[in-house]
Image (cartoon, rainbow, N blue to C red; front, top):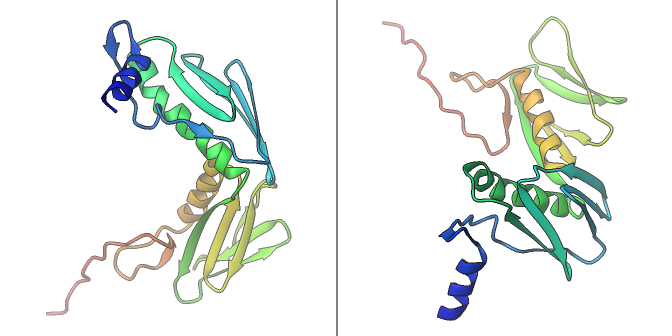
Length: 196
């Protein structure tokens, strides 16, 4: 066990100094039915739910061997250390996403507030004089059930970005909590003015 730890430290040692990334040093196994192709710094992942391609900085070496994806900094620099874990995390999300879609749920809270899908658009009544209409990207699935909007897709970034744009249309206010919030979001309430 002690020898194994030493060899691991030597493997991730560059220029006599050890640099470690808890996420970066983890090996990522490719599930059955998933195809990963690496062309220099460009990674393409194809799975049951679709295909994702992303080009990373060339400061990180990405390799595939016997169904295991590993990452390693090319040089010992502050930039490479910062990118190591980030690169590994993105690749893991790509592998996960083409097998199981990522989801974000938002709750529409307020009297008269509602949301519905009309064609390829998400239409929301949020207390304005006009409805708020947002086009749904073709690579995302958006559904509405009662007061809950669900955004799903194989790209974690796109799911998070679109969900954040929905929330920005009517951010929850701190007194009654009216607005759009994530389903797991806790709104810190403020106490209203009291009549003397």
